[in-house]
Image (cartoon, rainbow, N blue to C red; front, side, top):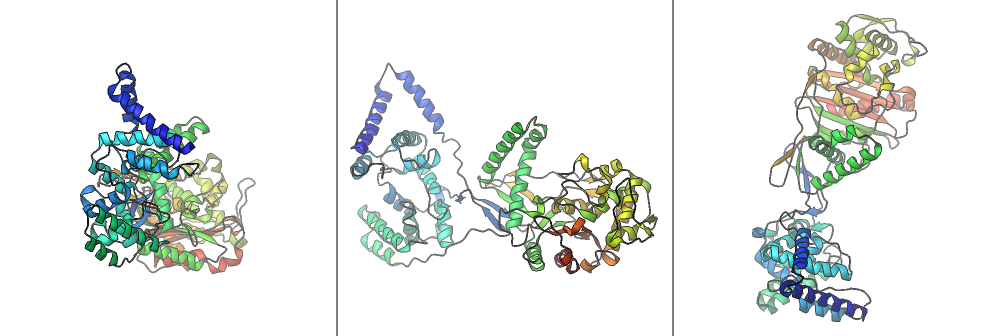
Length: 615
């Protein structure tokens, strides 16, 4: 009886409301106010459904679908009339007559639910279902049902029946994370809704009534039974002849389930993070974060940025990237083949001409949204920092030549006395030999001559997010930093040795809305960080490292190849970063929790990975 009373209350309240709305005089202003609030709550001027965003490679091919939820929108004119007929027959046979709710259906639901102690069926019209999906939740309470009726009536006042049906067919759920009729067609049959035959249309139209029960993948037979029932309903409503219905029932239904495209998860995850950075820069969040007065304020801004990012990624944007699939596959394969199951690693490859990230692998056997070592792992750089922090600034300041001499024996500044690899004392060597063999004694001497401030000024243009003022010590000359750098940051910095200019590298080329309008693009603002003379000298020194230095094991036969390697204290990290005339690639190998890797030093996994990518 409680359920019956509830429904009587709902219907009674509606009658009172509409009687008041149209006939009352003394309370007219209050009714007007309520109507204005309702119109504001049920705004139909700019309904924008969540859609699937697409990530495209350099050739414009989709390599990843970002689904929040999985929806491909289809306009009314592309929805076959037969499909409209069968969905109306299935869900709301009086759709074209009612004003948003169907009193007869509500009464039938009351009778059906008398035996239950809570709402089981609500007699919802298509318009009510649309209101529920657009503005309300799926909660089954009397208050929500009452609100749903008001909202549905308001929608009917604002939109035509065709507009309501178009929205409905793009909103409803078709099981398996699929929303909308076009998405369902693509998912279950791998073709557009316009290419379905009528038997297939009736089949997918069977799903929304109960997506769990009529899931075609898990409950094909039940879905087929409902399909035939819907065809019989079309016969009873004179939309189809009995012979036509029987012929359609006999047409075989063959599912061709299309899994969503989700290739290259490490690169795709990075692109999503880069999109957030791009939004922050373009819409002022980055500046707000930099100027935040407290952690609490910073957290609020970060939350606003996250919400904005979710809005953008849920709007069905097309993200054009610089991804080169063949190179991405090669990078992932190299990492997986050359690292044992205890090791982790990352690779980043940047195109020299465009300064765009064309491949990025975030770890061995990487799974999407896992920790991505390529841009989230900050590690001690070891000797790969030397060209940037020691040799570049020294040559720039003193106009030194690559054959100028320097003492490479162990050297102390105060209490800081780093040793050379193996404890060797090589004596006087050229700058070229010093960098190629990665001597620590000479690096420390050169930084002392250059000056710490001057050295750090030279790396200030680079995007080293976690370099702090406490890092300005002589230990930094051989890679001693508080937090370190990511593989992406270091590889990006090495692009300055292409031509002396630095332009922060990105994966995203452009972001467009579903109508093709460009929403976001990175602005190019290259800065000269090395003079042409310094650049030419560093390139020769990097080449020496590839042909006669610590990078020999990674050598590739190219018109130009330059390599610098790095090993951190206690063999916690192995690095190889270098460039050819076309690409710049960085490789890091280590453990998530740093530990000694001296036992694999001779195997040179980082060298092998770099070589395989660049060959």
